[in-house]
Image 1 (tube, rainbow, N blue to C red):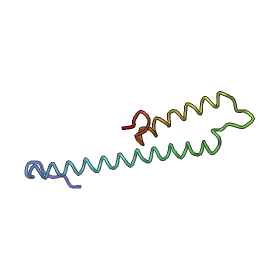
Image 2 (cartoon, rainbow, N blue to C red):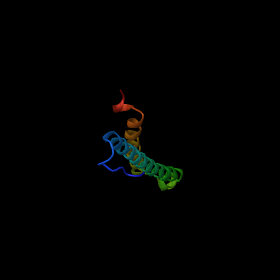
Image 3 (spheres, rainbow, N blue to C red):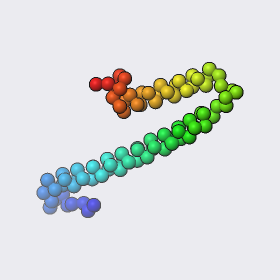
Length: 89
């Protein structure tokens, strides 16, 4: 996008250009964060498919505690994303 000369361009055009740049920057940041989340979800899904690297003969209460911790963190996220739990309206 070509930048306008602030001395020869009306203020409303300058504001419109700044708003357009800001909107484009926000969209790019959003897409970047979404890609970051998608990558984390893919890694978690793969780890879950592999039973969180636990073997049935080796499962103990420590493994259960670890999964309980993971589940509580994910619940905080889903409650926020879906307006549930403490985030319910």
